[in-house]
Each structure stands twice: as C-alpha cells, then as structure tokens.
Length: 245
Image (cartoon, rainbow, N blue to C red):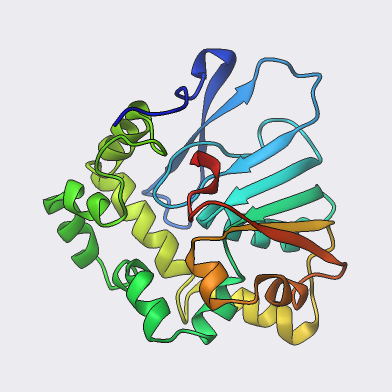
C-alpha cells in the first residue's frame, strides 16, 4: 500500500545539531533538528513523540514561540510550559492526557494497550537489548513495520534506522524512565500540583477519536486540572498518530 502524502520536505529547511552538557562530564548529548529558512516567520516549536524523530528548540534564537507537541513531545511541552512560562505564546498538545493522570488511572485496558510504558521503564539494559535484538518486531507491534496510507516509506525507513541505533534506543528508554513513578518528570509534576503551579499559556488539546485517550480519559477535564485558563479541545477522526493521519 502506497502512502497518500509526500515525505517531509527537508530541502526547505536548514539542519542543525546542538551538543549539550550533561551531569556526567564523560558523556554528551547531541540534539538534531531543522529550522525554517525564512527567519521572518513567527517561531513554531514542533516536538515529536515516540517513536518518531526530529525537531528541537532553544538555539533557534527565539525568545518566545508557539508550541505544538505530539505524544512524548507533548509531555516535553507540558514541562517546558511550566518551567519557562514566559517563552510559550500558545500551545497545543496532541493525543495525550497529563502523565500523572494517566499513571494514576492505570487499569487493565490502559496497561494492555500502552504496554510499552511499563516495558521501557525497566532497568537498563533489558529493554534496550530486547529492542535491538529485533527492532522490526518492536515497531510491528505499533503498526510501524511497513509503509501505509498513514506512514510514508521515508518515514518508516527513518524509524527503522533509529530503532537500530543503540544510542537512540537507550535515549528513548531513558525518556520513559524519567517520566515513570519515582522518575524526575513525574516527581516534578507532583510538586507542581502540590504548590498549585499550572500552565499559564493559552492551551488546546486534540486527541484521536479512535485512540486510547478518547476511550479511557476525560481529556479536557484532566488538562483543566493543570492549566490556569480554559482548556480548548476536541477529538479528531484519527487514531494516535494525528500528525501523520
């Protein structure tokens, strides 16, 4: 089955790499991204989710920006909006409820469909070694093993390449470990709630009508608990992968 859309028009963008400091001086982290060639346009920060790749912020040189995040990118957006409220003009998150709410309301159905949440947080190197032993098998579980009307061939090839990279797979697992119970992200979320710290930016959430968020969570209500203003949002006629179809 062929894709119904074109691949990402990378030629219209400039690429960049940012090497950032880490707590461990013997290690470094390099973040790859793309930025528009037209610097006169307002800044829109796009944060991807699991298991996609690309796009990041800060050294684009903009002090403020609009913010859109899907999946894990939406969770980064949530934290960013709390830590840097002066930087976010408006924000949209796609197909997520707040991380803490999702863990607190975990039941059989959620744990079955979102099994990877509980697999990837296991201590290293177990998840990493199992994924790297058969990246295609892992991606197949999420429908990302071959091109389709939703996923283009270049996108699938990109995902396969990254899931064959030990550093990429380890970073992915570390992201989930950080947001797991007793992880730093979830700890910060709990602290924010305890002191009444909420997202200040105008906020919208969109979620897939065919997905887990629609089935198991009151999405607008949950975001209303962590936002100062009115939460705007609705379902859209897709599954989880809203940006791709």
